[in-house]
Image 1 (cartoon, rainbow, N blue to C red):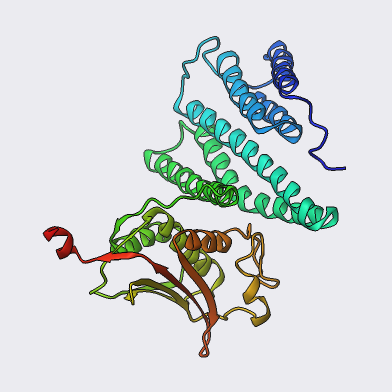
Image 2 (cartoon, rainbow, N blue to C red):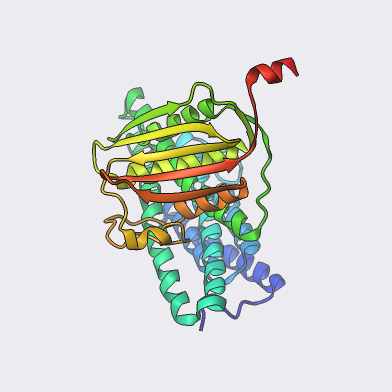
Length: 359
């Protein structure tokens, strides 16, 4: 029997969720002298987790928000007011809402994945793929969440002993971890959009050179050891396409290259116009891909057998989905001298800047 089957109706879900939060919060309030208000947050998060295992996404969102409001009003000093006394407590409340909301989204997506694979491949494959997704998501999310919690705990416990420089470093760690967490959630939401068929490109004139350098700024925040070289044809025209979608394509390809190529490898990004098409190439001098697995790398949740790294297996499938939504194609091939090359070709209207200025 499925973990998420036999759910009650929506009214019962809302009622059960609110009653659960009320009962747990009441017990914690009675023993407030014995239980630190930070511990109450973890107890309420457990309640949200239990609700998320059985309920639909909207009741879980309501539970998460209600529990945050209850915790703020009844437990965070000063009590019985929505004002919060310290920056650390405000940050902790924000992290509480973020983690509770992400948990709701992830649980909902896992439920959708399970149902889809039950229809297509049967119960046995569904359980296997669900476990794979759960394990990989746990790994990918644990690091940034642990960094956020650790830095927040440092700010709370040692706030008076920390210098302003120390505090800025901790806030920087929180910012980086939040960015990584946001990227994971972004990939999940992008996959959801692709599956639902709601992807609709919003085409506008795009400067490819500017877009590539914008993506590289985001990539550099990960401090990869590889060397990135950019080669854009100086005569490349403007292309009319969805810049946001193309940015996601490039970001996922470059993140994939940064994660899986050897230390100190060289990664080349090139762009040119060929017969009215935009052609982008991401090339590295790493180990390349096993020939027998090249046809599978764009499949959802697929990870290379001996990659030595755990990931969600969503990045390249999003690359394929967004590229096709842009009326383009993507292919992967190994290079004879070593390494791999991704080639993206997109049919789009072109124009040179002078043409636009004279139009």
